[in-house]
Structure formats: C-alpha cells, structure tokens
Amino acid sequence: MSAARVLPREEWRRLGEERAAFYSTVNPEDVRVVVVEDGGEIVATMAVLRVPHWECFWMAPEKVGNAGVTRALLKAALTEAAEFAPHWILANSDSEQTNKTLQRLGGEWLPVHTYMLRFRDVEV
Image 1 (cartoon, helix red, strand yellow):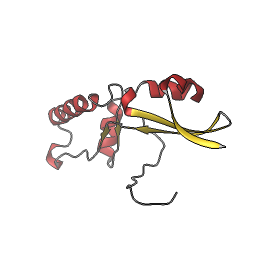
Image 2 (cartoon, rainbow, N blue to C red):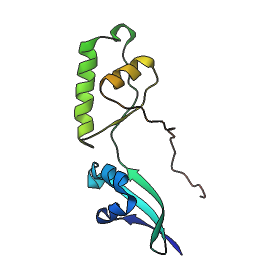
Image 3 (tube, rainbow, N blue to C red):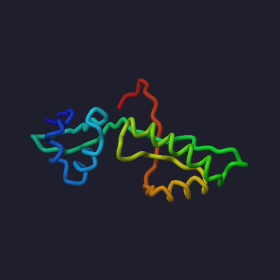
Image 4 (tube, rainbow, N blue to C red):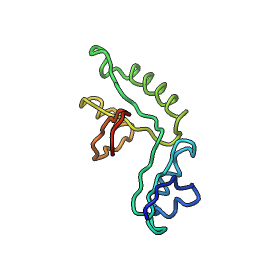
C-alpha cells in the first residue's frame, strides 16, 4: 500500500547523493521532502521549498548598463535573499541584459519550465 509522508532529514541519504547534498544546502526549516513509499521503497519524491527568488528585475531605460545602480540593487537584493537561504537564489529573466547580468554573477541557466499554481479547490 502506498503512503505519503515528510521524509526526516536523517533519511535524506535514501534519495541519492545529489539530492541529499542539495537539500542539505537549504536551511532545515525551509525544506520539506515529501515521499511516497510502497512497501518501504520510495517510489516518488517532491521537495517543498521556501526559497529566495528574484523577480521583476527592472531598471529605468536610461540607467541600464549603469554599474553603480546595478551594484547597489544587487548588493541589497543579495543581502535580503541571504536571510532566506545563504547559499543560493533563483532568478527569472525576461531580457537579454538581465541574462548577461545574471551570468556575470555566476548564475547558471536551468533548463526548466516555471509555473505558478494558485491554491484552490482542485481534485488531484
């Protein structure tokens, strides 16, 4: 019989080295790893993360390329993000200029689709 539960941190090694290593970079209060087990075997997993995420990165057109404005914004945003997770941040980009800035900062493009799901009464 399949049963879902939150996997305790001490069992994360059951998920494999790569996943366990990633989850260990997140503050413990900011991650819940949900698993479905069938006969004690993990058959499905999903992490629920409270993450720092940069969104709506915008600059006035006349300030685009201004290093001082960019540095001030990024320094303040990094400081705020570190309050949530000290090792990483997710960021979306909707322009080539933002792409370049994020790449200069060492950002790695993730080949994923991002969706926003609203909580509502939906039968799963």
